[in-house]
Image 1 (cartoon, one colour):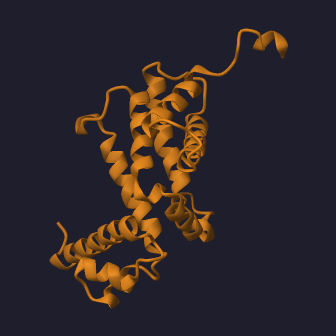
Image 2: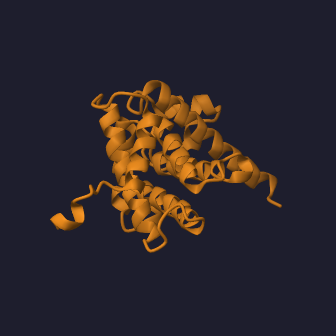
Length: 202
């Protein structure tokens, strides 16, 4: 059990993050002020600084919060697919739809975590790679992915390919719907790119 005071603190923290994410989505990061966030959260402006040192400091907290939501969404008991590879594709689609994946906001997020790169938990890209690695382990357990590969390495490859394709799509260099692009990218990684002559040519 938590105290009433602690519960109210958590509720205020949550309202601030929800308000910030909504405003960043609607107006953009630069056009949103701390006062805008506190007005939307219905708290005094000074309350913001009880939880975050600066406006920029809320971004890593948003990334951590959204990652926890993503982890919950990938649970089969929450309706996620039984196939771990299908869950990997689902995870990437959910990340792509998240406001934090918008290039402008993503740049702000990564700038905010740059001073803390020595901390594994502070980097959203690494956190996503670990989440994907967990799904890779599960895929290895059911035979969907080779079991002689390091799950964290494979998770990192999937993450890297995903962000590259996401930027291509945002820049308008790739046609079609983003979920289809993600699906094809993961399938290509799993299928491999070697042609029939590759072994002999090497």
